[in-house]
Image (cartoon, rainbow, N blue to C red; front, top):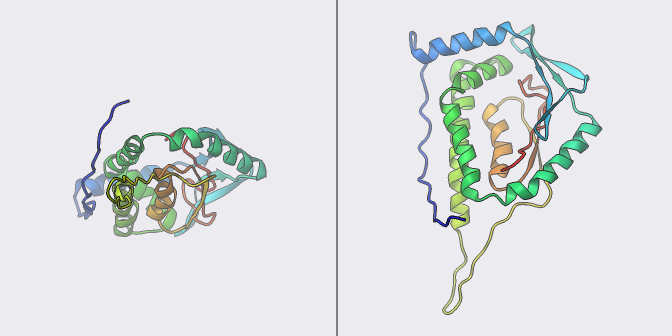
Length: 231
């Protein structure tokens, strides 16, 4: 096992793109919106890394075009909920015992992907699913989400750095550990960034999380229960 004192620099806020006429980001986003409107997808539950289709399905529509169906999603029942709880608890030991720097690297990688190739996908999904303008989506689904991921990783190191005072001939040390059991996160319908933060904030601290998006969100992950298989 390698030893090292790892330090993260305080992140900078993600730069907001302006989507000006003729800009590259506007062209890419318009193409993404067109693709998303042309296909209807099926959204299973995700439990223990497996796709689960219950057959009890509902529609995801565009709020400002209520006859346009973007997707159908499968709803969880008591059986699926129990399976998700068991899967989360099974993953708990491996996840909470992973070195914090390895866990942080997962979320920092997610931030980089959101800042890059996944930016138009998240913005497009947010605009269609929540009827947001490009500016509203950019500051929520892109910038705020990226900031949450980066600052949560940084803030974790600040928390771990807080240690008790030690008197002469004594070295007091404090270890931080995750909560017992699991975290159940029910996220709101109108903010992509908050939906992400309510599951990733406890997860980055070593907790396992079950995710239930609001059923009125019309989101592309509505009804799914998501948990990490390993930290």
